[in-house]
Image (cartoon, rainbow, N blue to C red; front, side, top):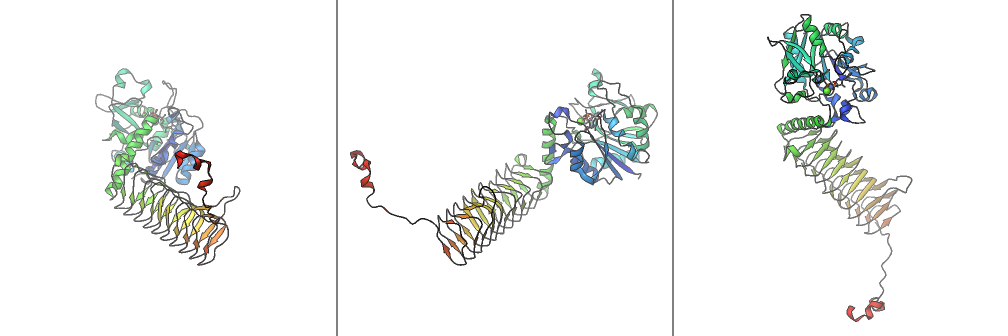
Length: 462
Ligand code: UD1
Ligand code: CA
């Protein structure tokens, strides 16, 4: 096997996206398109990967970091010109170079590997990856001669009516003999409808010079979908989602309605977990085994242990440990750490707080900037008052404390183990172990109050 190199083209603006963001940075199932391409390319074990950047170069490099080398294309003069920018890094080397676009997020490492192998086994100088597409508009067309040999590739805007009828398209992925590639790139001209230097023109130049040019047709067009606008972005997302969901189904996850379940590509889920329709799992979320997640739940960068139940709730950058449960309609915000067997019921919010094992928070509570021990009962409507308009303060609650309903804990305050807080109290001072704190006005009853009301004189009210 000769040396292998990969060039990823990612310098274009993506005008047809009508976006402030650069095209290759648009995410598909939680990962930027160019990151999808690089992730697959990395699995092929090429000696070098070079990404050509231009529009949004800084952002692309920030995203992909040291995983690839970079070549800068200052002006976007076309795909041939883009590849030429990698000359300093690659031109002198012997081997095979695969070129792929940063806007084709669905290609798999398996397909890339197959193209390399086909090209190497057939000792071609160029092999273009093609596909059949009944609706080929926008793609370059593969023009073959009477012997079915690839002659050239014609872009949509340059194609004659007859050429436009061709349904075999250029997927934008090619293998080239590296030195031949750079040799011919210098000869590509821009005398075409778009005034650009087209990479596919290298194919025609090689063909004319009796170099061995082959086409490798893939069975399934959908993998080669190129994303030029948001219609294609939505199509790519749909295809990727089917792929992701099928891999979870095969690994033992029950998705009650897979077509209505939205799972990002890096999410991990353990077997025997059940996920209802309308659940959204984003970012670096991991979920254990034997969990149950009901419709309307949204998890972003969440860490969820085994046997957790999440009922129509939102969890962002928070952790739920084994056997805990939440919801319906609660919100776990960043830095919420929910310990094992903890019960968080409905309409609760937890932020930057640790909640110890088996503590219960049944209804309508806010816990912010706090550390709660284990086996605590937090009554209905308890508020951890953490903010004075300037700073945030922390509250500690010890093990087996009991916090009555509708209490306010004004931080900073320390509630020791086994302490009690009477319902309706506004707690501003520390509470020692085993003590009870009551902080509310005593009730005063006014006898015969009714009789003093003017209304009571009215016959109709008697
Ligand atoms: C390209 C091919 C077309 C093929 C299609 C497959 C050319 C001329 N046409 O068309 O035959 O069917 O892909 O999806 O190659 N880019 C740069 N610098 C540039 C121009 C483009 O880096 O100067 C990058 C873009 O960021 C993009 C990729 O190259 O990732 C392809 O460019 P794009 O404009 O999308 O080409 P298509 O019109 O889709
Ligand atoms: Ca494209």
